[in-house]
Image (cartoon, rainbow, N blue to C red):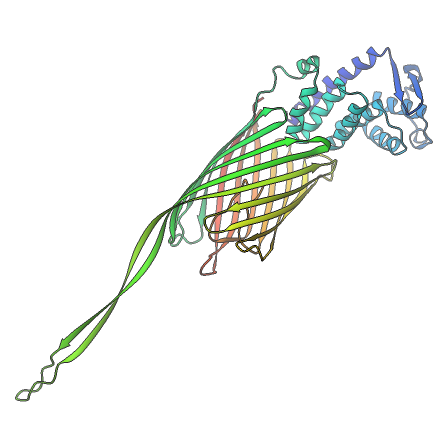
Length: 463
């Protein structure tokens, strides 16, 4: 679901709200811990509320009366502020939470709306109205796994009203291809790679992503062809937690080039010619040494493995994550710990900023190094998304994003900056392009060189 359908969705949900309240014979019941307050439609003022009403003393009757009046008049900002104030003063019941959720939803603060609709469902489990709003709040917050998991609690009537047909198992399909262009074509040839992936669910709580990648490059030291398979399993848990586990296998076939020097020494007797009429000089020994350089090519095969696990906690204004990664390569072993945060200062996904810190070590695991990876995500419009990420690394390469991005290059990556632009060109069809500047450090010689990386891809989200 994308934002272009927001007004239709809002109309549908408000219509459901109207029918729900009419079914209660125009009577709202506010449940407090000990008291029950009944407010009828006649009690609600039709004129605008004063500042005194909104900021004055609160009791159960006034909270119900004023919040409902603001709801009826669609005064969303005042309603959100008033409900938050009332909740802080320990007024908490189903209708107050629903109104707060609707207010934040209409203001586009979907991550804030999630909190209130979840709380409303604690007061009235299985309620269609709160479930429907929570579903769309999840979608607009890009918490797709939670949205799909929520549908298990939908009544048949709600499922029929929201979906023309039941959501299928395939969540999205992605395909991309790219080229890495080095700054020195004499030593390094262009690298080519392609990737295809599919994300699907096998239950409403277990999501699997399968990624297949091919990579090929020639250079002075070797020619390599890699076939990669990545599997990621994701499951939403209670209280906003999300558990992800990834496994990546990299099958590398390489022709390793070695230049072997051979030295050959030959000894010759040289008989010099003396002056005429004189005896010949004694023979002399001449030694000639020659050096020949021959290229030797050795075909090698290696299986590299990476396993990772990440636990994410999603809150109103931030996502927090911790993770661990183990890597077994033909040239080294790696251990990583990571911690990340992604901030949503406006309580929606149109802007976020954050990053990940990696503590990693390899081989003897004695030296521990830090890698920083900040990132910014912006929706320039509802159909245009821009992301910028940066990597600063002082040591060996790392595996990123729950093991999905693996660098088994023998050369290190001290820094990398990436720009990605995605455009929704049709309903559920995204076209994206990526540019990356990557700096490398030659393992043996120690000098630095650069890559410019260009990627184009498509992402299809079935409707």
